[in-house]
Length: 600
Image 1: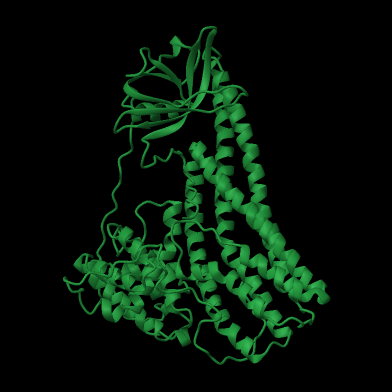
Image 2: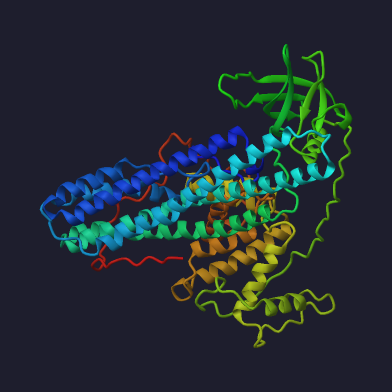
């Protein structure tokens, strides 16, 4: 099991659990940073010490062998599994290279050292800068919050208003720095899959080429290299599509006019509260992280230790009632009382703001009024929509974007109720980019995706299976759970995409490319979260299954008496093993050339 995703909404509550999960990412970042330092150091040994070449390669091999990728989410794609095993494969290849091949590795610095140092400086270094900013803003906010809580309600209204504004400003700065830090640290976790592996792959190729390795060794490496590069490119494509969606989500979260705490599936409400504790010598206010479960009215108070020698235990209470505390009855602001079964007297709580108090009272069915804006439902639009395209051999079909003006013009003309069929696809304005862009825009504009929200989870689960037969069988069955009109439209579209992919040698649009384009178009989660964004790569795999299995899936529904094969438990070996250098059919390829990787 990998690291759980960090949700942007968790940055607002800033719970101890969130901090603990963030710490796991920071530890992994340090682990990766140390690993990169070792790789760079070992690579320099190979370059600068020709006499110790053999020893340097062996040490480099051992470093690769010892590293294991951690990942975000609960499942890896086949390509990610290939990448995760790639360092072990590289290490095995290096161990087979004869000692004595002591030729200077030309251009090794450009191939290996500079990209890894660039990754450390631009990605890991930038992430550490974000961390410093986050820690600074965190310290400023909580320091200001503690001061704010001690303000007396008897102060002048102007002073209280200025204090509220200052606290809001500090909290917004802290929240933005937290969101930016969470975004960056997860991006580094994903980017290293290809940004770290690609330089190592290029370095290995240079070693094999520049040291005049035998034709047999060259042929051993080439097929694996090409398959691994395909996995790297597929993973990069998945990353880019996920990154764009995640950036949009981050912008929406940062730009939201009213930031709300995300309620988890367990707790109805959670966050920091100050609790009045009465002692023999007086009264004090103690900060707790509290959770309320509305189903069973359980209220949990977890102490947050701030002073040396202070120790409070977690309290589990059962709520009876919640009442707002009048301002003139206490010198503290934002207070409310709760009565519980376990305590004979009410518990006086202080929220961190008036809005926060209203949220707590709403969750506890208190007397504080809460108003909700009415939900505006989107008007449903017609599903039956299809294009008959020409120019399937045009390079980059569906990847290139048409003019927004022409796209809207086409859509308006096509959906004109007076003449919906009067669209001239042969018009000079209706080029292939306009038509394909209009189709993608239409499909993404549906109020519910073509593959439906109700089947989204089952389709993702099918794509995550390690058993290839089960993947196909499960997707086959789920297609026939779609509404009839959805399935008809899906069949028409997939048939067209099969035709497009059959010309991939000319249009350069492979099945994998089509998956990246149409995965998020035909499938999307009902709730936009970081976890949902990370599943986009599995949406792409569902599309690949539909295209590659078109003839079987749309031939007819699966027989009712035959269920899809049950996937084996994860403890058993994979039905499809990761690619290796040693176990594959022999192939003949031309001599190695220095690789050129695209940088975006």
